[in-house]
Image (cartoon, rainbow, N blue to C red):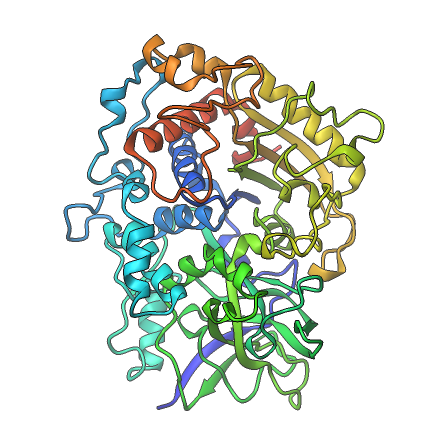
Length: 550
């Protein structure tokens, strides 16, 4: 059986989708990882943005881990498909906004049948364990994520994703045998171009990897291609000292991501490649979304004996530079995109997006200035992983105490794209916004420093709007007294970094990432808070995402 598929070299600054998106402003929204907490707050933010009517003119929507669940659900929901849980339109998917004054426990306990928020109220742990009995853990994970977030939206179990119906027809016409029974989904043309981020850890033959010398790369799953936006050679080191060097980079049509060919692009920017031995079914949205959130992958890939529970898949790099160069074609391990980057920021800078809104749906609260003042002398020397989420400072080349490449199976120390000198003013501005009580939302104009690992030159300018999940004291004051008593912290309530220690809403809004199942009350309250934050900061967000972003 001969199978042909499109391949691209992928060069930072020249994404293949550019011609398809040229009519939209150079803007993007990106949702961080954070499991069900991140998914839920992302749905809330999307509700607020929808009511602002800015999503039709936003160019990109990017997601990592729990943020990728929201990105996939929002982008690929099959409105009107058969099924009682399938929303008829976007309004049912995102549900309606409820202002804080109208919230009460009776209403919070009700979850509409077609609301996207329902996904986090389903079983996770028990369902994963049940499927793990007869499947690898990574397969069980992907299946449960599908069952909870995609199946209720009418997406078929093995649906591949493409640009549009014409792309699906063309792919099937080229490959009538391989794609005869394939099902396809595609994003709506009037909504942002989706990017689902997953991490490529390294070749399976070297696992477990040396914990202090990781070389992860971000794989981006888009409707046009799945691949790595910057081609380079990476030397991987196993725990026992063995070294292998592989070329990573380039992209292929999404449904063909698990396939390979004998030759790569050979220096061409785009070509059609062929294989006569397809060894896997079409790559699906279920697997892309599952891989993006498989947080266990980073942990187990560095631990002997249990590393076999990492997510293993074929990786083929089309990014060869000459006709005689052999392409990388080997079994690699994949994991949660947050093991490499938790914000999807670098991929948007590689695309030269000029205005980026980063939704930092983090578990760690942003410390108030009275606890940690970023503008104080030697402040970074006292920065810890409890001060704020440790992913954020690494984008400025600032490393909190205790964060190393041995930490939680990650490789985040290659992520410096902004000057360390811009870190303290950015955090101070977020602290000031948080203290005002209507959301930690600020815009900072930033310019990149050179980052050879990701192929980013110095001098790229972008306005970055940071939306850091936080308590909002003004919103809390508008809650009915009975509900406010369940939400506001028992001590230090005037400090927005203090959280409630007991009760139904313990830890709100920073519920633990490991708490995959949320009650209807928690999910509805989280989404309501985040939609409110969008409304309170509408002018700033409209400036960032409008037709002519500032």
